[in-house]
Structures are given as C-alpha cells and as structure tokens.
Length: 192
Image (spheres, rainbow, N blue to C red):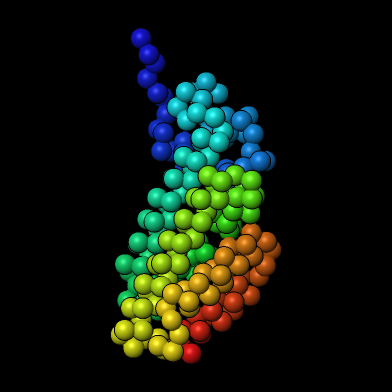
C-alpha cells in the first residue's frame, strides 16, 4: 500500500523557490533542499524528480507568486502611472520576507547561458513584463496620462531594462534611495 504524503506540495515548492532565490541553483545542494524543505530525500525525488525538475517547478511557483502580486497591485492602482510605479516599488521594496532581486534575473544570469530550457523560461518572463508595461503605457497614452511622442512598445523595452537593472542592484547593498531615484528617472520618460 503506498504511503500518503505528509506534506503540502505547494508549501514545499514555495520553500524551494525561496531557497533557490536566495542561494541560486548551483549553490543549492540536495542536502540543502532536504534540510530546508523538511522532507526526506526519497520523498523529494518521488514527488518532484531531480534537482533540475524541482527547480523548474519552483520557477512555475514563482510565476504564480509574481502574477498574484502584479495582478493585486495593478488592480488596486487608480491609474496607469500608479500601476507602473507599483511595479518599480515592488521590485525595489517587495514585501516583508521577500529575498532581494528577482528569481528570473538570477536564473538568467546564472543558468541561461548554458541551459536552453532556463533561457526560454527567463526570456518568456521578460517578454510578459514588457508586454504588461507596453499595455499600461498605451493605456496611459490613450487617456492623456503620458506623452504620446514615443512608441509604447519601445518605451516599455526601455523601462523594462531599468527594471532589470533594479532587480540586479536590489541584490547588492545599494541604497534604496538610489534605487528609487533610478525608478523615478525611468518614470520621467513617460512624460517626454
């Protein structure tokens, strides 16, 4: 008779996501995962496969995590400007207990050069954020909130580049005031 699982898979994936986010893929050993996740090695392999498979599942969990925060923050925003400001603030300040930076940026830097599957995941996530920014910029241009002198898609590429840089800087000891100045500079492009 098969044993029943004594753990919540989503809770374990959330823990794995945070561990990979903090330590990176290469620095996270199976022993680290077993200890941090609080499950037996055999349960880890039986439920999630090998470390790479667990990492891919943790990335899927991260997508849900980000989508939830983005949808919630953007739906509460009263304008396109506030929605974009929310994205910048979230990348800088996040929420209590959020590891610094961004798991997608971390994996793009660490793994994408030699792992096509990870490269595809990172690239897809970046396209989604650029599209979100372009849609918000278009909305702001249509309602007169932003200048219409620049193409929304090109401006979104530029703003996304700033967001990527902020996600990298957020992993360092950079002063948050500096990060907010960079965000303010990026936001000012909406008015030119």
